[in-house]
Amino acid sequence: MTNDTKLVRLPFGCNKGLPGNVRIAWGARMIAPADLVWDRQGCAGGEEGGEERALLLDWLSERAGDAARQFCRDNQMGISNGSSEEIFTLYEDERGKVVGSPQGSHGHVYIAAWLKVHED
Image 1 (tube, rainbow, N blue to C red):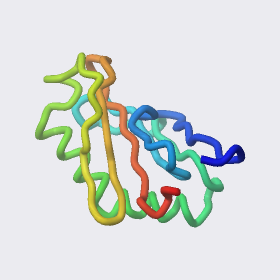
Image 2: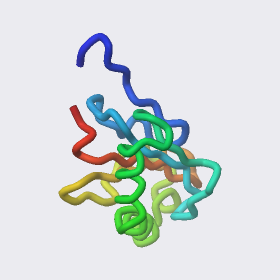
Image 3: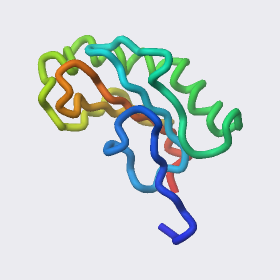
Image 4: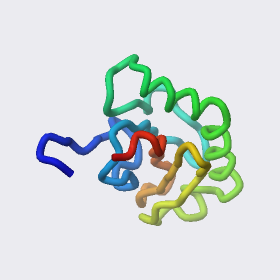
């Protein structure tokens, strides 16, 4: 990492699940196991409304987001393991990755997602 590179910090979500080399990411806090709250999600890195963020959001809406939420439902994330600090891979394909963790919250799941092309 160069001195002029900043770590991406999500407004909501699983910051500790982000690799240090990610430039653009999306995060959310869900009510366990998979209730995505509209005002507890957002992007970090890149330009607001920019093409790179749009690529990430399109990937999430095409399949990755629903698949990650289904993983949470199937595994009762945040309910059966609510005290866990472990980071789980919720979905991954050749384009990107979604991770999540209850972060010891006993009722929430914190999510982070990024595209592999946005890794330095």
